[in-house]
Amino acid sequence: MAAHPGARVRQEPSAEGSVLLSLRGITKRFGAVEALKGVDLDVRAGEVVALLGDNGAGKSTLIKVIAGAHPPSGGSMSFADQTLRSFDPRHARELGIETIYQDLALAENLDVGANIFLGREIRRRRLGLPMLDRVRMREEAARVLEQLDIHIPDLARPVGELSGGQRQAVAVARAVYWRARLVIMDEPTAAVGVGEHEAILQLITRLAEQGVAVILITHTMSDVWRVADRIAVLTRGAKALEGAPAELGEDAVVRSMLFGRHKA
Ligand SMILES: Nc1ncnc2c1ncn2[C@@H]1O[C@H](COP(=O)(O)OP(=O)(O)OP(=O)(O)O)[C@@H](O)[C@H]1O
Ligand SMILES: [Mg+2]
Image (cartoon, rainbow, N blue to C red; front, side, top):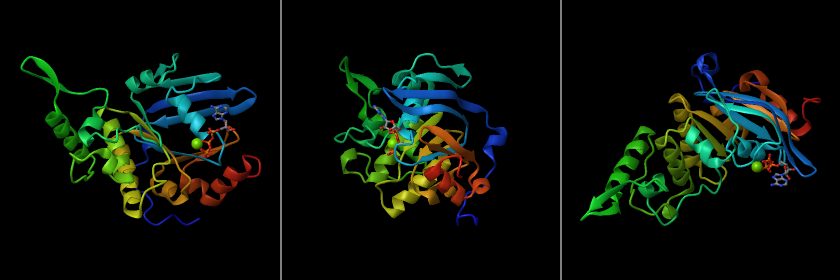
C-alpha cells in the first residue's frame, strides 16, 4: 500500500524511547459483558499509538482503565516502572496521565488561563487577602501555548466562545503545563473544521517530539497514517492486530477492525 501523502518521517521512537505504560492481560467485566479480554499494550515515551476498533470494541473502556476511571477486573498495569495498585483518576493524573475526553471538562465561562489552572489556581495576597492572580495565570497560559505553537488571539475571552479546535488545544496545553507524560485523546478531531483538524494533528506530533506519549482514538484512517507510530486494533475486547502503520497496511487494519484476528 502506498504511504499517505505527508506521512510522518521522523526517528523511530520505539528504538530508543523507554516503555512508559505497560498493560498485561487487562480484563474488564461489566456484569455479563466482557468488555476487555486480556489486553497487553506497551506505550513508549515520545510515541503516538492509535487505538482503533469498531463501535463497542472496548477502546473507551481501555482508556478509562488507564486513566483510573474504571478498576480492571484482572491483569496488571505499570507506569514509569511503578506497578499500579490503586486505580483512581486523581492518582493517575499525579503520575502524569492526562485524558482528554470529548466533553473536555473545560469551564465555558472562564478564560484560557483560568482553564489551564482549573482546580490548581495561582493566588496572590492583596491587602492581606488571598486573591486569584489572573494576570500571572494568563502569562503562564501564553507561555505554554507559545511552546506548543498554538495561536489563540484573545486569551481573555471565555473558553465557551472559542472554536472546537481551539478548545481542544487549551485542553492539550493544560495537560502539557502540568507535565503530562501520557496524553490520551478520544476522537479529538471528530467535530472540528479542516484547518483545525490539521492544527490538532500537528499538535499531536509536537507533543510526541517533546517526549510525551500519546494514545489516540480515532475513526479517521488518514490521521492514523499521518501521526501514528503504532496501531493497536481492538476487536470485541481483544487485541486483534498491532504494528507500525506502514508494515500493516490500511487494508489489513480495516479488515481486522471488522473481522478480528482470524480473518485479517
Ligand atoms: N459502564 C458500562 N456498563 C456496562 N457495559 C459497558 C459500560 N461501558 C462499556 N460497556 C460495554 O463494553 C463494551 C465496550 O464499550 P466501549 O465503550 O469501550 O467501546 P468503544 O470501542 O469505545 O466504542 P465506540 O467506538 O462506540 O466509542 C460495549 O459492549 C459496551 O456496551
Ligand atoms: Mg468509545
